[in-house]
Image (cartoon, rainbow, N blue to C red; front, side, top):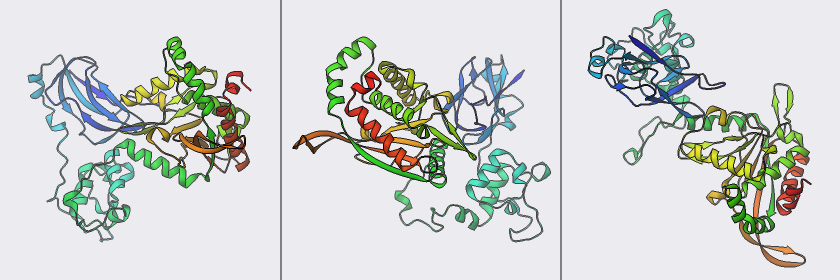
Amino acid sequence: MAVEIKVPALGESVTEATVAKWLVKVGDAVTIDQPLCELETDKVTVEVNASVAGSIADLAVEEGATIQVGAVLCHIEAGAGGATAAAAPKPAAAAPPPPPKPAAPAPAPVAAPAPAGANLAASGPAARKLAEETGVAASAIQPTGKDGRATKEDVLAAIASVPAPSAAAAKPAIPAGPRSRADREERVRMTRLRRTIANRLKEAQNTAAMLTTFNEVDMTNVMALRERLKEDFEKKHGARLGFMSFFVKACIAGLKELPSVNAEIEGDELVYKNYYDIGVAVGTPQGLVVPVLRDADVLDFAGIEKGIGELGRKARDGKLSIADLTGGTFTISNGGVYGSLMSTPILNPPQSAILGMHKIQQRPMVVGGEIKARPMMYLAVSYDHRIIDGREAVLFLVRVKECIEDPERLLLGV
């Protein structure tokens, strides 16, 4: 009996995924819980496992295809051996190679006014997505599906057989003509995560009235405290004492005093959040992700360091879940770990503010009327001016500065 393997529920607001990689092929014998494929969403990459033992009867979708939650990925012939599955009657349903149909007839030229074209709105997600990404017009697609619906192959055929001025217009960054040094270039399709990062950052710039304010903080006292206690801290708590826990605590102190920095705009309402879920930006080989440290205000320094350490490990290993990335009321990004001296961080929608930390560098400062070398860090807060006034942004950053320069304030809660 053939068992359907479907795209599982992937979390709140996630309705589709891309088949990033098949880990099996038709005819392979599989065991229960064996990984079958990797699905890439706009948040994380997840594996889909076999629910029964048997052999792969067919692969219903090809690598790179976009598929809806609940759609069929493949069929497993329960209890069958690999050789049996290879002869299964469904290989025709296996994902055919995606080459276009260069010889496909075009009943009407694109410019003809009569044809209605493909019904893209009702077409499958793979065809609709491909048409949107390439910019091919619906009138150029000759649908073969039911009720004028286009298949992915129909879209590929239209791209191959019709000159694509509309596609060029949709992607102005790609020159229409040949590239003079194409032999020394490499083209790699953007991953779903990278496309989502690009879209969300551009959305933040287009939607929010984004502004950045700067300050600098003297790290002398925090560095001395950390140096003095880091060994005892690690022995007692089993976690390394870093600077991030100090900044998380300092930011929460500022957020409590200035609630608008922890709020967001939803429609024509302001949503003030009386909880503090702090996102910590983490760079991975796949791109930037922002896992969330939940209820950070009730955690002590050890709890914060352990939580951030665990999220960082999961991010680097590709094990973050949707829950790890969902929500967040405020974000901290530390470009200093890469050597950044100053930057203007971009908002992480729908949040209204983000703190940028930077490299600690010795600079001459006037202290008590004398010039001394001090370990200084530039801080930047980008904020949505629609909800946060300049006064509030500056006061928030000053509050963070005060807490870091006088860390006893954090320990005593003053």
